[in-house]
Each structure stands twice: as structure tokens, then as C-alpha cells.
Length: 383
Image (tube, rainbow, N blue to C red; front, side, top):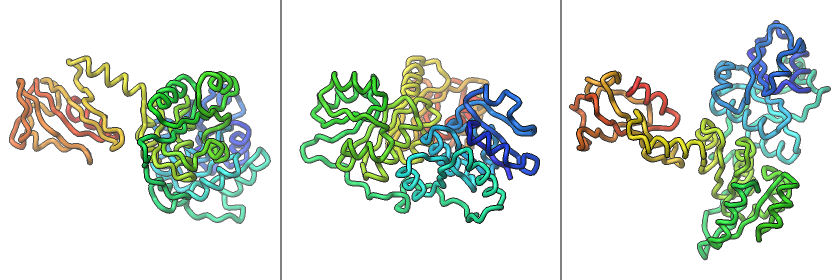
């Protein structure tokens, strides 16, 4: 088997020592380079340094051909996000994630993610389980279906408010959450903030006129205290993408909150988070990048509009003599699925019927592009 172990702490390191690394291909990923550089790592184990919620890092580690991915970090939200990426992006047959909160374990297990409460002593059991030495069912995991009825524990309520106001829960009381809550209060909405850091909690509680709850906003118990059962919107704006994702999922699937919005620090996580059930993602990095590109008219590729809720954007590509498509008929250009040319701007005029048009240097091609396919489309037009 090809086994990828995420997290080389107590559980991960003990598991790798228990498993037969000669009989199996074992890959280890950890954020801390120090734990992977010592003599502690068995011979033959490949190591990667980085945060495994990064889809590209998982791909580099060979997730597309993995038989098993074990998410064994000390942070359960990281484990749950990795498990879902492994399932929906890479279709890994067997995925197991460590979860410490019994309520959350049951909730995500019901949604099709295999969870496990494991300590160092349990590493031997896990190794035996994967090698078929323990009496455990070997059935493949059911795919995670964020929008499917089987995955939703509580039906979502319709997004409605009689007087135009909403009850919004803001997860994360840092600067973004604080100013967001203040703006929402000013606009007449009811707001509650959830903040995990006690110092930040004390500061925010003294400076804003709305309930502030101390705790982890991705847990069922804390969301219950914040009144999630009657909330219309949840905005997760912490500094950690995995915490924001899990908070949105718990809000939607355990409390039926109709609208879940997540702040995304790594723009590469936007597409997968939407695929995992987040209604709207907001990436400050992507926003600033788009502003910069829109202010640089000579940039070869620019984002004219981002339709985030649909996972597509309107892009323009400026062709030069070196562009691969220059001199070719527009109808011959084959774009990836869910991508299409909208028009061509040529010498100040827009061409929308372009089946027989031959692309020229100096043309600007306007295209509707799936965010997941933008790099491929850019390569087609610009090389």
C-alpha cells in the first residue's frame, strides 16, 4: 500500500515505527522540519515539509495514487480538512482523521469521514488495522457530499428575515471580526462574536455592544451557546483556513444555518472550500491581486470579475506575436470544461461572433473561466 501520514508527532511517529516500511510505501508530511531531519525517521520513508491542507503539496507527495491517508496532527480541524481534500479532490480510498471532540467525531463520522480517537498506545492498533491483522471492516469510505441529503444532519432553513435584518455569528474576534461585527451592528443586524483567545475575548467584550462567547467556534457546544440554531449567517474570519472551513460546515450541517461565509488566507484553498460546502469565500490576497492587475493595463492576463459563488471568473488575455494561439482560428481553440470565449477586443471594437476570426497579435480575448482551470487557460492563450 501507499500510505501518506500527515503529522509526525507522537501518534504519527509511533505509527510509522509500527508499520512495515519495507512492505509499504510510506510518505510523511509535517510542518516542522526539525522532526523530520533527525535519525528518528525510519529508512526508506519519504518526507515532505509543509502544511498538508495545501492541495499542491498533497499532490506532490503522491495523494492521487495513495491507498491510505492518515491525518494525525495535533489540530483536529486540520485533520478534518485534510481528510475531506483527500476524499473529494484525490479520491483516496481510505482516509482516517484523528478527532478529539466526541461530538465532532460523531458528526463527521456520520458525514462519511472515518474518525479515530487515538493515542500513542493506539498506533499499534492502527498499524494492525491497515495491514488486515485486526477484525475491522475494510469497506471504502463513503464520499463526502456537502450538498447531499445524506451528509446533512439538520435541514437548512431558508435565508429570510421579516424586517431585513439577520442574526449573524462572527467566528473570530480579531481585527477582521471586530470591524465586521461593528459594521453589521451599525446596519441594524443582530451579531454575536465567538473568540477562542482569552485575551482577545476580554478586549473585544469591553469594546463592542454585542454578545461575545469564549470558545472554539467550530465546535457544536460553543455554537449552541452562541445561538446557532436561530442564526441566518455565519462568517468565519479567523486566521486559519481549516478552522474557518470546519466552523462553516458545522454551522450548515449541524444547525441548518443557510449562509456560511469563510475568510481564506491561502487563495489556493478557495475552490476546495467551496466544493466542501462553504457558500462564499473571501480572500484578501486574491482581492489585492485582482486590484493590482486591473491597474496594470499591460498585464498579459487580468481578472475583470470574479463570480466567487459560481467558482468562475471573467478573464482577459492580451495576445502577442509569441502567443500560441496567434494566427489560429478562434473556433479551433479548445478550452477546458466550463470555460468559453466570450469575445475578442480588436482595435477598439468588440467582436462577439468570432467563429471564422483569426486571432492576431494585439487582440484581447475575453473568456469565462473556471477558477480551477485558469492556469490551463492562461497556458493555452499565453504559453
